[in-house]
Image (cartoon, one colour):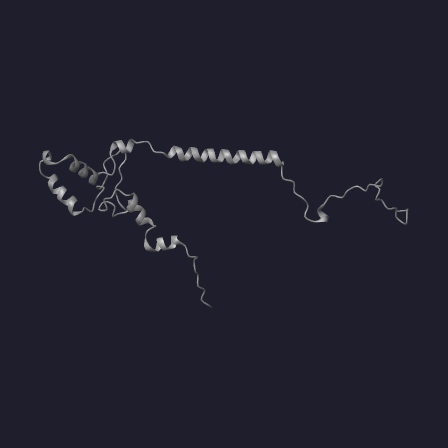
Length: 167
């Protein structure tokens, strides 16, 4: 059995993928919250699950804390009057992924659904227009045997009288 080498055509995208500039990790870094200590676990593998109707998750949102977050947790054990508003927000973000206002924020899913509906309306309209313009498809026979026999036109100017007229 001979070895078959498979070469992909060169593209700048392949170079970017090989270097890691385009990929899942780079997308997470670009669109993440910037706090890498909270995003060590992927969401399907964590037990964090909070909804509006039951906002108490089984485990905190950030289970693996950075040194700054550990220091903030130690400071939390003291009097809360010494904490600034930014520190209180950081403590809340370690425990919960979203606030109630963020959970209640309307999603933009309706735009996608409406776009899909309008796309199919447009596609259906183009099909109807095409059928009105060109009519239904008429299948032509493939061979001469498939064609229907045409009646013989004797009055045609190209009619040739057979030698034997008995037939």
